[in-house]
Amino acid sequence: MAKFLAFVLVVLSLASCTKSTPEGASSAAPPREVTVFAATSLRDALQEIAPAFEAAQKAKVVFAFGSSGDLSKQIVAADRADAFLSADEKEMDRVADASRIDPATRRDLLGNRLVVIEPMEGASGAFTGVFAKEQLADARIVRWSLANTETVPAGRYAKAWLTSVGAYAGIAERVVPGVDVRAALAAVESGGCAAGIVYATDAARSKRVRVVYTVPEAEGLVIRYPAAVVKGGSATDLGGAFVRYLSSSEARAIFERNGFVVLASSG
Image (tube, rainbow, N blue to C red; front, side, top):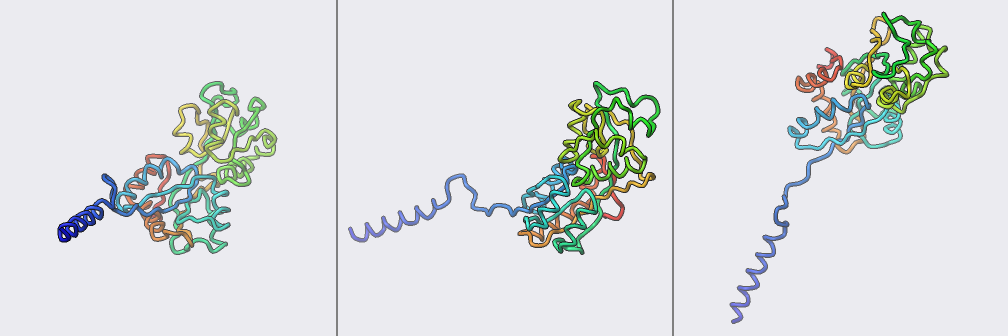
């Protein structure tokens, strides 16, 4: 009897060990996470790019989207990120000056354009015929929508261009600042503002605005999107892999499909 009881105890012990993992649950470790801070205007393209990277790296990309100005301040304040994609060089320089990026990983990935837009429905009538800079000051444009001209790259670019053509002083009091470029677009889509200036990539995704004018680089406006690995992150190796993946042929095709100018130097 004693031997039988001992045998039963061994069997029960083995059975309990085999059931240590709940039925249907995987014993595999969860994928590592890489945190990417990125400009709002990159949202659609990056969300389309991420799945292939995740599959190849067996990792999970966690995005934090926002205005580049807000994101750079968060990184400088020691908010944890593994990679940063900015909509302009000024905000990347801010992070670099705080010694928070790995300079060897920094690269200019993309270019963009600014466009002047108006609502598809309920247009003010200010933009008729061939576009002329004088139309920008038309009194029928009661409210202008720009991203915040102090903290958001799209807003700074817009203000710089309007100033260069002599129009900003005349419309400054009519400007409604958006928290980011998507907010500036939404204000025109809703008809809350009669005109606005946003990135061409954002306007291209909207069926509720009309592009009045595309600002060329020949007018002195060069828009660059730099990317870099952020020091101090928990997965900087994956951050570097993600930044490099953005120059792959697969990622470049997605960026182009979303309207970005892919820079030759990014490859």
